Length: 348
Image (cartoon, rainbow, N blue to C red):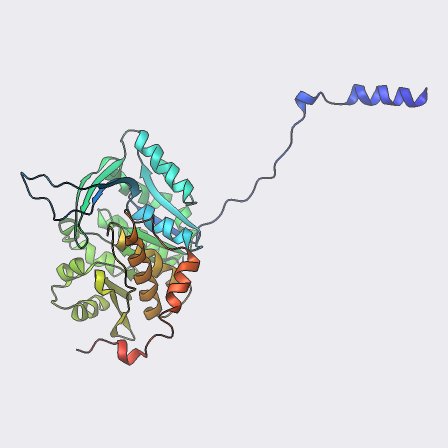
C-alpha cells in the first residue's frame, strides 16, 4: 500500500509530456579570423564566347550559369574552404535574389552575422561575358550602392575583434575610410585592399592616403599601371612599395609579382585550361591571405594566390572550382622547394 501511495504522489507531481522541453546548450558564436567587406552580386555568366560581343551584333554560346559572386562572397568562401573562419560584411537584396545570396553564403559556411538584408533595394546583378582569355561586365548596383553604410566608424566593434579585414573595394568618401583604417591599425588588425577597375573613384587625392594606411594592396596589372603610370610590373610594384608595406600586382596568366626585401619577386603558376576567368582575382586574394596569415614568405603567398586563382578558372564563376585545402597543399608541393630567391627576382 505504501508503495502504491508513493507512485500516486509521484504521478501527481510529474509534468505532463506536452510541457516537457529539452534545453539545448547555446554554443558560442565563432569569431572570424578574417572579415571580408565588399559587395555580393548575382552573376549571370555567359562563357566560352568565340569573341567579345560588339554593338549591334549577337554572339551565341551554349555555356550559361547564374551564380553568386562579388569579392565579398568569393574571397570569404575561399578562405572558409581553406579552413580560415571568415565573415562577409555586405548587403544582400531584399528580393528573391537576395535570398539566393544569403543561402549561398550559408552553404559555403561563411559567417553571416555581418550580412544585412537591405530594407529597400534588391540584389546587385552582374552580367559577365568571357572568352578563354578576356571578359567584360555589365552591372546593376542595387543594394551594393549603399555598401559604404556598413563601414561607419560607430559600427566597428565586430571588425576590431578580428585578425584581418580585407576590403573588396573601398567606397568613398575616403575621409571616413581613413578614420576606419587608423582605428583598425590601433587595434592591431591588419588590412588588405583590392580595388577593381574604377579609375573615376580612385582618381581622388584621398585614395592615395588610403593606400598609405593599408597593410596589403592587391591590384591587377591594369589597375597598377593606371595608378603608378609605370610601363613594367617591376617598376610598378616598386612604386607601390613606396606607398604600401606589402604591394602585390596580379598579372593574370603570368602569375603575380611582389616585393621581397625591396626587390621584385615572382612565383610560378600551375598550368590550367581556363573555362572562365570571372572572379579569379578574388580567388587569388583568398589564397594569398591564407598564406600571409600563416606567416609564410611573400614568394609562398604569391604561389598560394596563383594556385587558387588558376584553379578557380576550371569552372564558371569564381567559387565553384576553388581548391580545397588538401588540393591546394598537393599543388603547392609540386613547386617545392621553390627556386632560390636569386632566380625568382626579376632583373631590372
